[in-house]
Length: 300
Ligand code: HEC
Ligand code: HEC
Image (cartoon, rainbow, N blue to C red; front, side):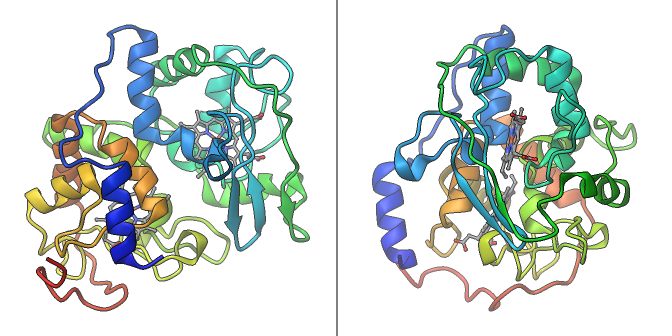
């Protein structure tokens, strides 16, 4: 679909420039709902293209290693995670390990979710367990050799994964810490907006600097404050983008980023601004992705 068509389709159906933060209740379920949207759990676990039930799994995720299918994470006792304890759930997100001790593939971005606090993980589980259950059975991933061998993931994790909750930096303002938590632990921007090493880990020297080789072969822009990144965007431009998916030139982001916007549009304005404060605070990296922007006004 052309970008212009996307703009019309998306603005007509899902996005409103006046999207407001969801009214959460201040209990575990309400707090968990907020985390759930910020972290985008529905995306990979809901087969939206085929009208699949929420979190019932079956969504195909194409990667260079093969196709993954998000599993059923509803609270169904057999097909979902209904029998899991809080500890099982925390271990999956923190350590990338299943209740039987086997390793998960990093196509499940526990590499970012590991930074969530225990309290947020518990609230998230309470919300997921408050949703309708589905008995949809899981389907096996379709991976090339040798990626189908789960045991090899132990080595991958030793080289590419550090488990542990986010630790605030006392030297930076509160909003920057809050933004760091939102970006690094929840909204996991770096999973798509960073180049990867040969082994598929996030290239830490190019953290958030964008890549020509992003998810599903898409380009993802440089989010650092360099002029090849968000340096020329005003705070208002970034805020409007996080709420609507509309870029400063009037273009609109595509489907993967659209799912992220589904979540960021539901955050409070304070949290949206905290994301911006954090993105302004990271080191600028010179990395032009695609053509330099021609500036606004070519559509309207
Ligand atoms: C980018 C896609 C993606 C996102 C976003 C994502 N997941 Fe997953 N998740 C997966 C994939 C793929 C697997 C299967 C991994 C495997 O088989 O090793 C998985 C596995 C899981 C499992 C293990 C299920 C089981 O039966 O063992 C849980 C629990 C889970 N995800 C919860 C979540 C939660 C909670 C969120 C939001 C915080 C989330 N996921 C966001 C892709 C994703
Ligand atoms: C699931 C992958 C994914 C995640 C997570 C993600 N993005 Fe993106 N983002 C994309 C893709 C793909 C594009 C390009 C969209 C297009 O060209 O239509 C994009 C585009 C953008 C753009 C427009 C500049 C550009 O790349 O053309 C900005 C700004 C942006 N994302 C910011 C963010 C922020 C901030 C976060 C975290 C809150 C985030 N993204 C998380 C995939 C992702």
